[in-house]
Amino acid sequence: MATLIAASIMCADQLNVADELAKLEAAGVDMLHCDVMDGVYVNNLAIGPEWLTTVKNATSIPLDIHLATINPVNYIDLFAPIKPEYISFHVEVCEDVPAVIQKIRSHHIKPAIALNPETPLKAILPYLNDVEMVLMMTVNPGFAGQNFQEAVLEKLHELKALLKNNAYAPLIEVDGNINATTIGKMSECLPDVFVLGTSALFHRNDNKTYSERIVQIWSQVKR
Image (spheres, rainbow, N blue to C red):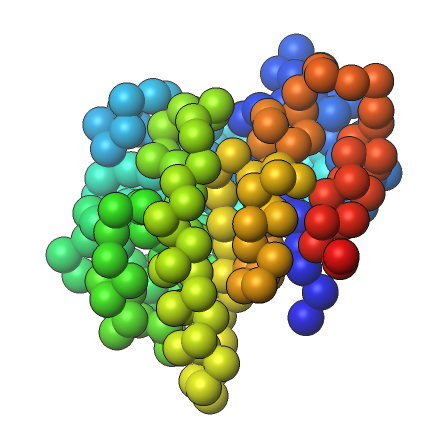
């Protein structure tokens, strides 16, 4: 499968979202990564179902909702009517992971499981055959602009090796300071989905379009 790009919509220009969505569509972005934060599990707040409904109605790009919340099962019914492609939740906050997976599937949405940089890979191994995607955080969730945690590379290598010999392989998504430099560090264990935020896509460090910045990313992926 080709590597996919998910644009982190919370990093876009919030006063010009319709224009941003049009530019992202023109750039060929595959998904919109949507961080939902409750101010409890992480010390930040974002994004509500009403706002995401507006986004969904304004674009054909599929939504990838990341629940950085406690009690994720309580949020699924709120966001399911938007019909995202994926809903991911954190293994660190779940006492009954299979129940959350089943809840997501009951809405005909693809379940994904997320783990933080310090969480050992063994925490998600029992569920690899039950989810459609694994979201590996390369920073701690909550805020943009953090340093890429290179210790996650070892987990990425390990997970890729495990899935190579597995009859079923969920996608692997990485999120957190993903840019041309950090993607280069993953050249020997490329994930399936890169979440691009401020450091790669939405910055103002040059005069390039989103399309041109994505071409720069692809140059690292395909070298």
